[in-house]
Image (cartoon, rainbow, N blue to C red):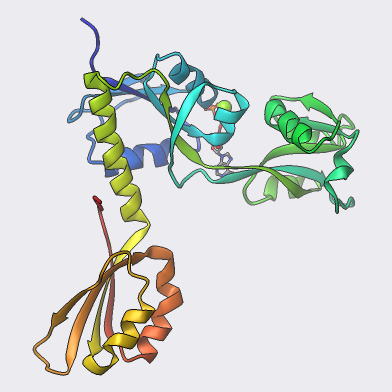
Length: 289
Ligand code: ATP
Ligand code: MG
């Protein structure tokens, strides 16, 4: 009998693994213990997880071996996979950047012209060069790209950078940004909308979206003197209309609002100044619009 479960490919033992699993757990999925197995089922959802090397994920999804996958945008781009990118997931953020010797300066992209640039992202780099009308010698190296300038094999490198520590250790510094990447949800282009599998997929996507919405939002609760209410409502960057409640103390009211998480520290002093007290900021588990 054909397997009716949806199949999701994710990275086995890598930088994206823990965050991918956490996202799925936040979607209330109960994942079997896996101890190195390649296929693992989810106990409370028609979903199987397929653990792969990240480089294989785009192709597995393109070919329909897995229906959907979680992988870095960099890997999708590099593999030129024919898949739909459904959603950015907000983790695994990094930049593909040009690394140059510490003593060099690049003030113009033209500095790349005719240079030897080592990378394990040849397709992305070539596309970048082409779109900037530049010619350079792209050297394809699969690992430890950062040692190639010291070895005299390359002038520059093009590699993923987050802290820049690896570059520093090799007396390099980062320069131009070639690509910004984060983990994305990808989907097989032929997943048929009329199938049960598609229903399973779209319900899972709704859960993922609600978790992502919630993660970026917080629930703000404050007490406000009634005569400052209008001033305070102007300060709150509410995602929808705030709730205003009366309190036992007559000249006070409570304001509850869902706000973008990153705004809190920007507004907290203004709220206090306008007379707000008892300021509480609570996490939200899910937001279903
Ligand atoms: P695999 O064994 O699965 O092939 P890998 O060594 O190719 O693993 P990882 O180093 O685990 O890959 O990186 C996986 C993805 O994480 C990258 O494709 C990129 O999208 C993202 N990533 C890479 N470096 C960083 C970083 N420094 N910070 C955050 N995310 C990163
Ligand atoms: Mg890899």
